[in-house]
Amino acid sequence: VEYFYTEVTNKNANKWEAIKFLINKLGIKEEEVICIGDNMNDLIMVERAGMGIVMKNSALEKLNVANYVTEDNNSDGVGNAIYKHV
Image (cartoon, one colour):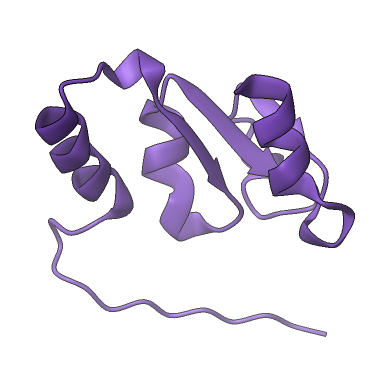
């Protein structure tokens, strides 16, 4: 099974820009942010967060960009990551 994904946005729009807005609004540090991602549109936020987490068997796992790899979605990966790091 092949997987294709297309996302069309403004070239300056990404998830990290939204998180930076919240960082400034809430007065927290980038080092205090945990981001969990599983696809290429999550790459920038996973790279720049204080704790970048990727899902096992995701497109990002192969890029070695995260601080931690959690289980996949079907194995409660997000819940496990939150439990371990929060």
